[in-house]
Figure 1: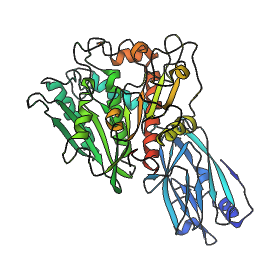
Figure 2 (figure 1 turned 45 degrees about the vertical axis):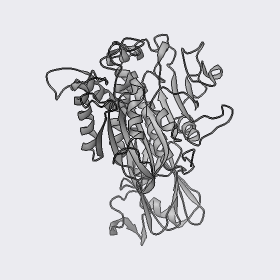
Figure 3 (figure 1 turned 30 degrees about the vertical axis):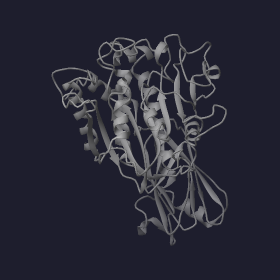
Figure 4 (figure 1 turned 180 degrees about the vertical axis):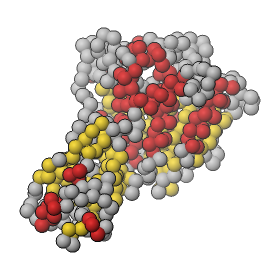
Length: 469
């Protein structure tokens, strides 16, 4: 690690003298000539720290008027809330915070700004860590859920999750998912709606987990549908694993719930697994348009919603031809195709372009099979199809219709994924299509980090409001 001098202040001399010291802040042994250590990471001097990519790191900064500035690919958290601009000043004696590196960071430069305007830049070493949301954990949970065996400690066999008729397999899976959220400490409910009056055949059955925010006047959420296409369903005849559509999105929500335990949120937040998406978005509509203690509140502003549906067979995964699979992330509402309508589009672009540094102009020699409703002439050969659009066909439409700003994540589908809604939609097939387990893990990790960062930043972006507000 190198320290770049912005001034020849006594403070810098002191830092050099204290480089070998470590321990708790404020202890007598951590003081040199009456001057305390002013900046530590993970209870160490910056010179001694090796940061782990994808993981949390704690820091403390002492001294009223000092400030910390982090690069774009390092997330800064104070009191559990993300600071989107990556800059925080000490007001009082000190600030305690956390740093979260993306999995794609290979070097970190932090700047400490002093109250006299001078600053010190620290170049910190980085090694590979275990990201708080990662592809390997996703794969492990996918294998557990989709595999059937006699030993339930090794595999759950939570397959055949279709709605519309009495289905013990769906009820069993829903109870498993509910237990996951409850085990993490969330206020969790199963919402059953009997639109046709027959208690033996619920129209929808959703798992809803709530995390309370500091502003009781607003609400926001993330979700994905846990049901799969019923037998005989179009266009492929239905499925039993529904690995891509949408067990993958279901597992991503389970991992987000685990990660969000360590953050605070501005608004009351629901993390949801919907049912009956394959039968007309009935599950999310039941949550949004019914009155119950854990349904969508009508007296709060619905700010935004992020949807996870059919991902992983997408950039950076490649087809057998060597071309990358398409990666879709569409924000909305999109009232006018010629202008940006909602602020969440700025967050969407910033996450992909600046934080994850995705190749936003990467194109293939040809066209993809299907894509967005608008701008398709400009996007038909674009790998990272990330923009504002009117595209529907999933649960984000329920909340977009209520004025929420939305983001919808989607990978290959229709003609780019031949197993769509068919018995071939299995985890083994997904692995084969992308060329191996590691490739699928990398693709899922990328889109999960994109969605997680979008949520965290949108949560602390006041301009993201209901379009009817």
